[in-house]
Amino acid sequence: MSKRSLFLAASLFVAVAIALGACTPAATEAPTAAPAEPTAAPTEVPMPAIGSPEHPIKVLFVPSVDANVITTGGEVMAKALNEATGLTFEVSVPTSYAATIEEMCASPTDTMGFIPGLGYALASELCGVDVAFKANRFGYDVYWAQLLVPRDSDIDSIEDLEGLKWGYGDVGSTSGYMVPLVMFQEAGVTPGEQVQTGGHNQSAQALFDGEVDFATTFYSPPTDIDSGAAVFDPAAPDIPDDLVSSCGLNADGNLVCGNLRVRDARANIREAAPDVVQAERILAISPDIPNDTLSFGPDFPADLRAQIESALVAYAATEGWGESIGSQDFYNWTGLSPATDAEYDFIREMVAAAGFDLEDIR
Image 1 (tube, rainbow, N blue to C red):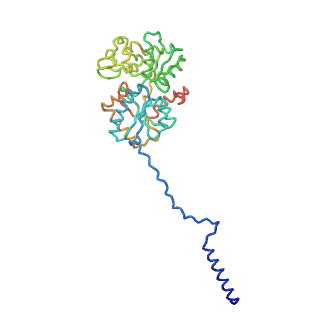
Image 2: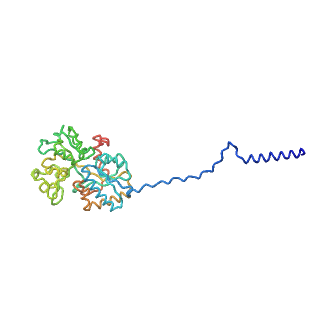
Image 3: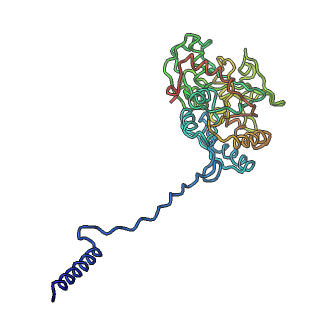
């Protein structure tokens, strides 16, 4: 073979080898992976609508009277509101006044609370809870604290309470604790041992049982049995002396004295202590206190709030009202009136004077 032929053969061999090498991946080179398909963004599950069965509106009540009475009556109200609005409600009685406030602030979009003036003053400052209505009782949109003492005691003035054992329901109660505390401060009186009883009823019962020397509870004036109108004399708020011996339960199970029906906290223990008026007298009552409130969480939807407010106004005119919050054994609201935040400045002034905050009522 000529040199030229050898050269051409060698050149062809090299070309084929190069071509084959180009088609074979290098031993150290990893195969290229196919590009991944783009992943779709996860779909966010929408929250159930407020007022739906999956997200009921929380109706909160402070435990000022028997919790079973509140729960039963609250369910009556919740059913009526559901029928009127189509919304779902869940009744709850937190363990204390402070717990009620904390729940409203923790759930700002779906809570409504029946809270007293002190609770409202603190909750509005704490997180913006907003008042809608105030209670009306027998024509009054204010109420009072009362200081109860044994009828046969020689206690004649607030000053005589110095050093005595004090029974009150809850430190978050406006009439049960806050207002009496200010009254004592103004009189220069320092009570002795303090006993937190758990509610107005329990305070009246503790005094009846001799467990405390005096008790502080809410006061509502007695009403005339025939007319239903309140009979109120601020200078003499108790049952007249000449009627005390007649006090007892009537055929309807109400506490009556002559022609007067007792409406203050003593009436709430009438079954256990039908002679409570003979055993306890009112030493004094406080200045006017703005009535307890229905308030809403700070971010409660305005459209739902309007529906509920309208339904409550209508419900207050029905017989069902008296089976729930209108019952004497519940909160004894005979009606409700629109309320403004400014009406509770009086409470705020007392809070400031006493140096109170939420920590003090826990």
